[in-house]
Image (cartoon, rainbow, N blue to C red; front, side, top):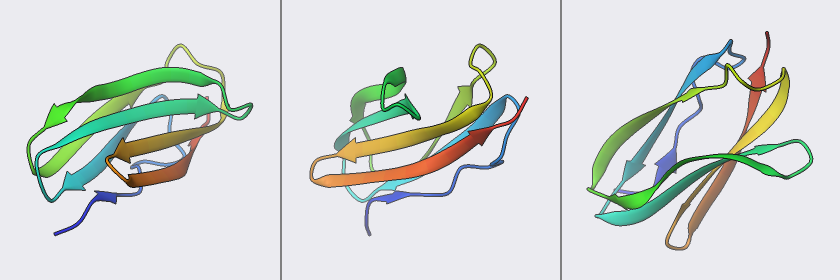
Length: 87
């Protein structure tokens, strides 16, 4: 019924976390990971997706421990959440 970015699980994580989101209609979706300085460090997805529930895995094995942000953009929907990588 609505766009959602669910809390990542697990969080804090080491080094893999699942990012779940839902789409009420077929939509162009982008998921980005940013570091604490606001620099984009990874683009997880940027494509047209079908309505429904989706899950993306982020393997942060090559990144340093610390605070990151995942940002979901789909049309006018924009949502950001914190991720804590603990190695």
